[in-house]
Amino acid sequence: MTLLTQLDLPTTASTPAFLPIAFFEGAFRPFPEAQLSIATHALHYGTSVLGGIRGIPSPGDSNQILMFRLADHCGRLSQSAKYLNTNIDPSELEATLIEFVRHNQPQTSFYVRPLIYTSSLGIAPRLHDVSKDLLIYGLEMGEYLHPGGVRCRISSWLRQEDRSQPLRGKLSAAYIASALAKTEAVASGFDEAILMNAQGKVSEASAMNLFLVRNGQLITPSVDQDILEGITRASVIALANDLGIPVVERPVDKSELFIADEVFLCGTAAQVVPVLEIETYRLPQQRPVTEQSRQGLQQIMIGAEPRYAEWLTMVNLNGATTA
Image (cartoon, rainbow, N blue to C red; front, side, top):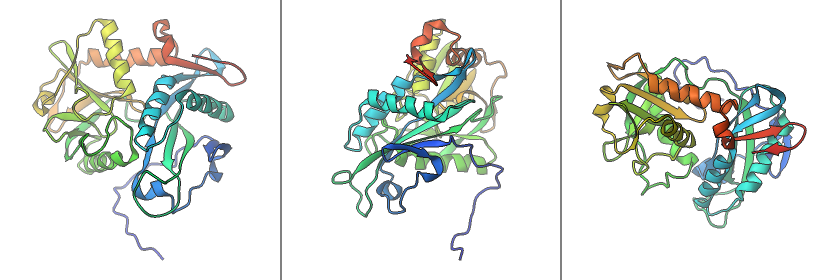
């Protein structure tokens, strides 16, 4: 008997190509065998924190995988876990993720999702007297958004405030606002949403940080604007500094987006994606800073920029790993 009526928009989305092996309840096992109970605490209360890491086969060695800023992702997830009243050693997490990659032997670009969650069964929203566990799975991933660019609307939904949720952690519960904003945008004929914060300033996109270019400066909402402290965001800033592009982190008004020379979004899944239009405002077609950022990160991720070698963890599928 069907009780629910789907109100979804028409979609052509297919089932992701999941990597064959998952890490679940302390062991590596086939992905279909990694199953949660319907009574799992995190399922009902959003009491979990997550990460997302990109990996690609090395262009120069088919037996080697390049993981982008793996140590930084593990450090952030370890910090996020503290909001669940639990600890995880980032170095042990990193070792487990490397072993996960070796078990799966990926042959194409992929994305890894580690999740720390309240695993007890039962009712009551709390973080004390409830068990926590780690699971890891992955999927093949090429382009997350159209690389040619996206059209955005300003969402009617606001980004949560840090005084109501610890936004410096990557909490699964916070993504309800992202989901609402993304679907609203798509239902309105756009590709992506831009969320404002409670102070009326630009915060971020549905699951990405935001940059704009004005008068030769690369500008991004500062960390006090209820943003996620993105690792790709930090990478873009470091790259811009090395390229001699002035970077300013500050509050951003909505009206600035409409007259910007360039706007782009960035994140682990999306990487760097230009914004073509915001609402009814078409942005300039020439996007030199966006293109420098996009190409620069792509070159770093394939190991073609020795200056940033420390950002890559090289996983030998049959042997030693170097960072």
